[in-house]
Image (tube, rainbow, N blue to C red; front, side, top):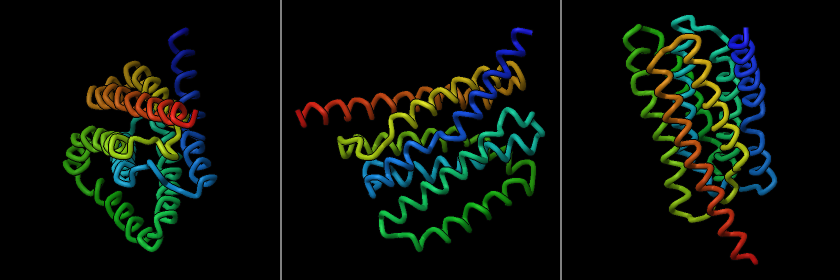
Length: 204
């Protein structure tokens, strides 16, 4: 009974947080009218990873509560992508990205081996998205408009998913992905906070 309560709490809190996870980042960009510090490559890789992951979960009929947040995250990332392209003066490219992502999404489930292969490299895709953001921060040595709150919430949701995956499906491929992504999200969060603190000291 206690385990069921904890599982429901983890699923519900993850879903709730993911409903607004990207909002702090979106609002920060809209206030500043700038995408400074935010890596476009990181966002594209993250979107790809999300699409592969949710397609895998749906293909194998995993319990919806274990992946229900991903459609919301994909929608938020798509809006972030439009904002970045807008502030970079490249909004016309949004149609190309839309066609690529929709076409890729359909292709994933054409054959079982395709979705299995995509999932096997999903960890590399997701990890690469975090490293792309880290590289952007290291180059600029400035957190710019990167939202620390968004990265903190992302870290929490991945930690919650480690627990829910362990007690429901037990899928090691999914479990390892969440462990690695949790650590990388935390790394990005600490890097953002470090550069923000350093920037505050300079202002003083």
